[in-house]
Length: 273
Image (cartoon, rainbow, N blue to C red; front, side, top):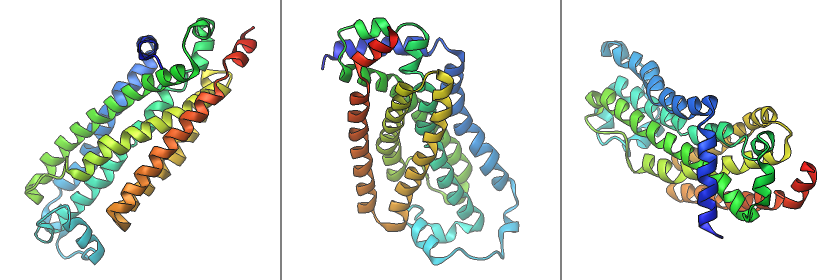
């Protein structure tokens, strides 16, 4: 593989991608929405409630105590209000990590079909790029904005959440070891898998609109996948989490091979002719 050719394709795709106001607004607006609006609209109302209103409520099950005692050393003395905030904060953090699944539905939808609509596919097929180099460049052009947006959202979300919850927990929730694993391991793998699926869709459809519509269907099974990864840790063990990550990595490799094989240069040329 010639990484120089991949880099050239990556630059071209990023330049064309950010010419679109729709894609640019999604790449910038979605992380801001998830990072700022979600914690302020969900956690702040809980913070604003008088702590006395939480007294006398039902206690959490023993399972929750054991689970979050691993995260918050002083879980028992945090109080009902603080405990609810901690639980909500972790749930919303997982919501933030849906960004690497959702963004590729926008950025990667037009990877192949967009070239056809812009009448640039002929030049792309006539280039010395191999199928592997072409697919790799297309994956990276959607992967980079997705991961960058996710990292931005996670950091801002963590900052806002820590500020709101620290008075109750007297310790920082994020970025802890588990959230870092989700941010730097699971989120990139989910992004790659989402992009690969979108490339497969973009290769088969006849318009960008069709790619967007089918891309929305990809989000649902991937959301179930990330829920399964979370459950594998919280409800089973760390080894289960490692196993889930390994499965995710294997899926990324499999779908990369499929995407490379599906993109048939000769058939594409025939269709253009």
